[in-house]
Amino acid sequence: MNANLTADRPTFVTHLECSLTGERYAADQLHGLSRAGRPLLVRYDLDAVAATVSRDALAARETDLWRWRELLPVRRTENIVSLGEVETPLVPIARSGGPGVLVKDEGRLPTGSFKARGLVMAVAMARELGVTRIAMPTNGNAGAALAAYATRCGIETIVLCPEDTPEVNVREIALQGARVWRVNGLIDDCGAIVGKGAADGRWFDFSTLKEPYRIEGKKTMGLELAAQFGWELPDAIFYPTGGGTGLIGMWKAFDELERLGWIGSKRPRMYAVQAAGCAPIVKAFEDGVEHAERWEDASTVAAGIRVPRAVGDFLILRAVRESGGRALAVDDGEILRAVDDAARQDGLLLCPEGGATLAAYRQAKADGLVGADERVVLFNCATGLKYPMPPADNWLDRHGTIDFDAL
Ligand SMILES: *Cc1c(COP(=O)(O)O)cnc(C)c1O
Image (cartoon, rainbow, N blue to C red):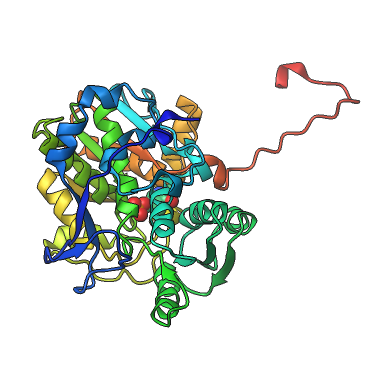
């Protein structure tokens, strides 16, 4: 077994903190949102971390998510339910992207998406804190990751999806042991039902950012990037933004790494990418405001970023602005063209949300926001295999005359 999961390692969580007001909350207790209705952030004794483990010692460990154990919240190793959370590769896409463009391919993770990073952490913490039943609204991938990890450790799950969630996601969730329901509404409508049941004490609410630990799992994307880039971050990151957990998590990771003295003050410009049919963060960015309004009639092929309202909107906007980045919208035609180009030209099958980051990068390069020589990371957050693909229906009759020139 992986040494990262067998070694006895100290943990360093000191407390939790409201992301809006800074109010402190005790660690090692079950929390949802803060009293102000905002996400809670986990805080660590980083001086003690720095005194305990060096950057080089950490870099020498096996390269999975658990190598970052001292910067993660789980106290007791036996609460970790692992399905093999590998470090994901940076794949160049020189033809469809350009010379300096790397795709962080999160489709290699368990359940085929980066939701595994957040959920492996949140489920471990739920187990640690005695939760036995969890409910979640999802556009598909988060529900699948929750079902897999929770089932594995005997936690009951109820998952609500918008009715047009891709069939493969709904079936995957069901097969992995959750009770899954389609709902005639969008993800925030599903979230309202989950919230009601939680208020009645029926279950614990696992909506994006409504429990504190998914951010900590997603934070590992930022930690990995730092290590993969030799402790010097790339120039720009394009992130497909729904609830924004990953973008917020990476920004937090960079801050913690700098406080540890493991990286300098240089930050990537963070580009929050949304679909033109559901772009509340882009609108708020352009309007210069701190909170986003609900996006009505949200619609896009990129289901994972079809999130009309994000409870962490101000955290996304703050990170994007502080980094000198932007929020960018791309339409479905550009998204599908980008997916097609990466597959046909570079042999890399992106999910539509990943296609959105390539489309946004191309647009940003054309607009002069990024230079052709800059080091750029695009996030592909799920395997393209989970999504519909264009038909391919050539057919050969082996008994007839075969026209070899036409093959
Ligand atoms: C959930 C999801 C996203 C959005 O991630 P957030 O961190 O919640 O913004 C993007 N792409 C895919 C494939 C997803 O499943």
